[in-house]
View 1: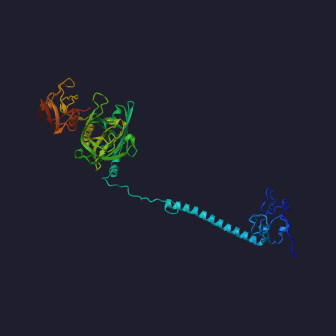
View 2: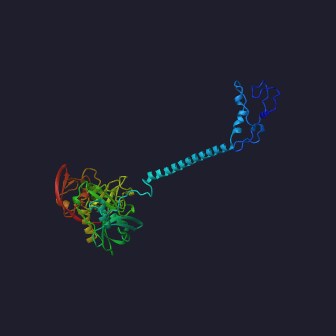
View 3: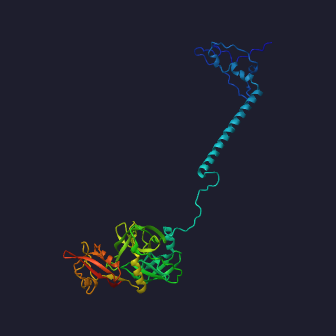
Length: 463
């Protein structure tokens, strides 16, 4: 018995419009039936009973282009009616398994990528997996070549001291170095000058030990002073060199306490020899002016280096650091606190040794003199003998070395021992570079004529 025909899905069209055919003019849209909810396994819920029956083949007009757009025709719902619930469930499980596997693979790939990136960064930073350990040189012996800067510094530093001076409302810092095992220390006069008669001088050694010091003797004309510490044992004096052996270009090492930075070591070369300089002059009467036939060096020297040693390539003292050319053009022992510009000046140790010996023995130093008064206002080339003496006496001291050599007022001295002299200050510097009793050859001009005289330097007490 053939199955009954399925009932219509909607009421008959009162306008006789063919189901899902071409609608007539102004024909209302045919009523449609919304699909019911679909359970998980694909079986329609609440669908008309007729729909669940076996499908009936319908002949769709091939020429009707609208038939394939029928969303509710029997061909549209046939797959839902013919689906096997068990088979569909297996397909869905396989799909979920496949999706799970794919998702897991993606997660594994993501985690692997992150881990690989971390490992790559670690490898790039450290060159391997594990703790970072950079290559480094092993422990080496601290000894250095004795002729190297480090070797010279190691030998000299224990003998270099820092001086802290105060008195009369002033205070300052300078440097000095040990002369002997009796506690004598050589420094600059302008370093200890603030102490005056009743000030305090504290000496700090490289070891950090301190001791009080007293002034043994000082001389402003040479800008040198000797102080002494008591109750200190084991002092090692610095070896003294010979400044006459120094040549331009020789390597040098300077040690001091620039800006109170004790034990500072710098190095450079000798830039020039016999550089005539004058320093000081703050008092205005010229009593504190120092005249130095200096060694010039480019080793950095700064305020606080004053009084410290200038050492040669073998660690021997060849000079006492005393002055610098400051950036503003001034030449002062402390350089106006402007710092080094590579123009430092040191008192030659040959001069320093003689003065230090006299200060230790007598408390004063002697100055070599010619016995003449110079016209310091003279602007021409050379040093002119004044027409009048500065203290009311004769410009050429009676019975002095100059008078014995035949020097007269108005004479212009142009050379000392064959070396040009361009000013009165330069003549004083050249003279101070000698000892009393040394013989000098002077070239002078008188009335347009040049002549040479020879004299033996006299002596005067220092101040």
